[in-house]
Image (tube, rainbow, N blue to C red; front, side, top):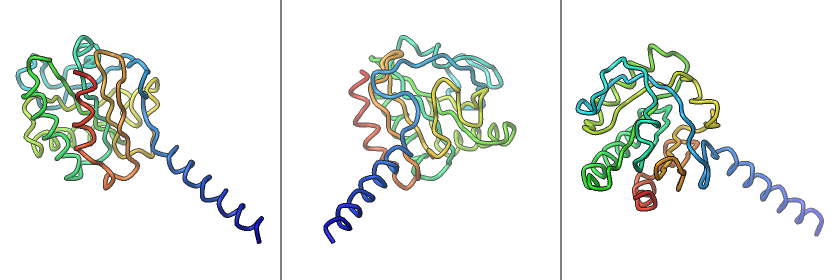
Length: 185
């Protein structure tokens, strides 16, 4: 009986560890953000980048605090997060807070349409919406977990200070991301 209980507890712990590993996605605290190219689809009309232009937004933002979002979802929770980050950007103009949203998936043309729709739905003014050249799972050097619905990386310049990743968009807590912004200012 004692062995059965110990074995059962070991299985529960193993399952918990496996579940936690499933949501690890993207560069983690202490890592550095690598360069990667994207195509701007919408948003941030005053940033000087035309829609359709290919560039490295991470590079463009490299001297500023930045919130880099990778999403496979357009769920209202994602829209809420984007709205709150856009508001934070307006509140932290002196610190030059920046952000950009990377839409991930299987079909590049469809993703561009999704990025435009997400930009419109969110109403974000300061956030560009992009599709990475490596659009299925983001840049290879980032290690975005294909099972992660949303991965948010908060970096001061190119140094990662926080990472919030969720397997299911229902687990996304915009307040957690917003609270981590203080780590990059």
